[in-house]
Image (tube, rainbow, N blue to C red):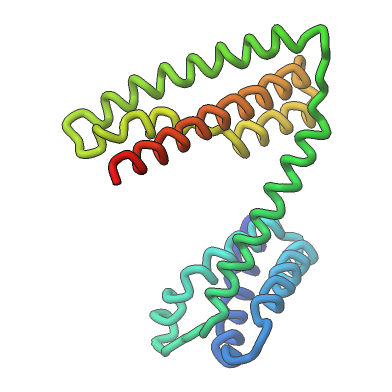
Length: 212
């Protein structure tokens, strides 16, 4: 029931909002109103006993593919500059959330002087395994390819970030055994892989300057 109610409410409200956006497409700050209507969609679905998260997901999918509504109603639907503003807003919110997440990750990172050496060595071991597997994968995937000359850059572009950090925080929130140790190791790997990626970027820039 929750699934159907969430799906139905998200679908219905997204269609209604697309039609509203079409009518008022020349008005300012519609993207802010859209963000507010997303919250309304969540609330309505939850009040009806449905899954609010699913309703919001469906809302976003339909809004992002509003061309389907054009075919369904067989009429021209234009969102004006609202689509561009929504994309820009989404990028800004994503950047803000990622930044706040990594700030939170830094706050949970505990440096234990007695374990820093062993954790760093384990992080370096994981980095070595990651680089070894990427080296083999890069060599195979670029075989007889024009990207063969970019092997080093592809190999070194291995920065880890949001995905392993999210899994580590999830493990801590679920209070799994050794979750804190796992979180610390993930942070070490994130730092080390980003250092490697920085070196790779520097080498690529140096190569480009030499060829010019």
